[in-house]
View 1 (cartoon, rainbow over the protein chains, first blue to last red):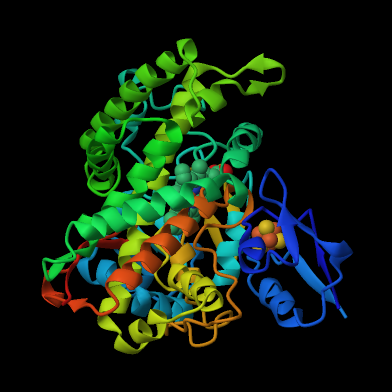
View 2 (cartoon, chains in turn purple, green):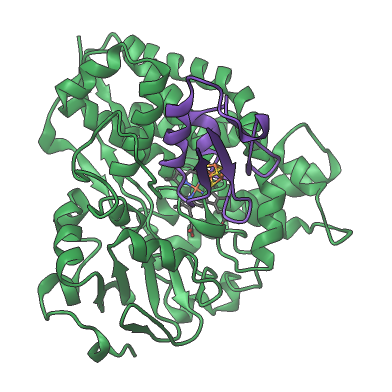
Length: 64
Length: 411
Ligand code: HEM
Ligand code: SF4
């Protein structure tokens, strides 16, 4: 599973980072970027879905 | 004037005459939103200067992105009367300096926001966590043996102004004044323009002096850091920095206080949820805080139509006030399953309590950290507590909703 953050949509709420720092980090403006090239480590698939379902800007997507 | 003919809404109390300051609405706005969503999803009232009230998530999300059609130059839910706003003596419309980025449109909004954001990322906020924990423990020490306290006044209200003061580099002895000033500017001032303007002057005079002081004696604090910012190669003006300090006071205190207070109100009255948090793990705390932010979203913002603009079958005339009803959007059943229930482990939760789009709350990571520490520290020390007198609880409403008097009891 891979996740992708759309930098155009992200407004830097950092909610994804607070819920899953294993999967994303944020830059100086709070905007998110994927760790690990977006590759979701085994066992963290649920967390990946959680951050998708919590992003108020609809900026994170999953590519199975 | 507003063209109410264009509104495909029934003539009914709520659709054409909602009142954001009505006592019942302030105490529990959820039924009114539900009714409006079904009958008149973009309602209008002439009350309180006139405004439009969307109640659907989709509409609020869309309106938050209607930039520049909906302007943020006055993000209040009730604008000041024109004769006061335009009086040069108040200095309110002296350019964009009345508190950018919140009361600004692009391009000013972009660069002022860029200057602020690096100071509010999760990593920039983390160093304040220890201080916040100590602060919360000390506050609890002050009342834990009394069998009860006012969870709003003695606890929730005490935390946010201290964090803002600490970040800005202001002595803690000032925090009671901060709370008084923001109450006069917000909770009381929204219906009392004279008081609002007086309080604004007081806040700005205070920061005029602080900013001038940091210009000559830079310190390790946010005011000094902001003064070092450059805009297109030019140093930032003192006036801009005064506006940003002013903004942090009015945006960061009553808001966070309301969220902490609403959460304690919830747990005091909901035994199952309270018991569940006593041994909650990090993951449950994570979703619970987002859920409490969703359910009790404290902040409604305002916009003004920059030109006549149509949306969803309604025409906002130039100058019309449009309310960014983030709290109402967060109860839309189209987006949230069982929206009127608090579900502490809710997993699908794209709430917009911190707004959406370019004005998304710059202080959200600070607010979240304060909420988490305030609630977790409370539960460690006071796991069992109930409302001492439900009838004594009071709520503030309008721009910022949350409990203001909240007596609780515990052993
Ligand atoms: C639970 C507490 C808080 C809530 C619910 C909240 C909510 C909001 C909302 C809804 C907005 C969007 C405004 C708009 O769309 O016009 C906003 C903006 C803002 N908030 Fe917060 N806020 C909170 C705490 C804070 C704190 C602690 C600070 C810190 C100083 C802060 C600083 C700001 C700033 C600077 C903006 C303007 C951002 C911009 O316009 O670009 N807020 N807040
Ligand atoms: S939650 Fe969404 S908008 Fe916020 S930082 Fe993450 S990706 Fe960006």
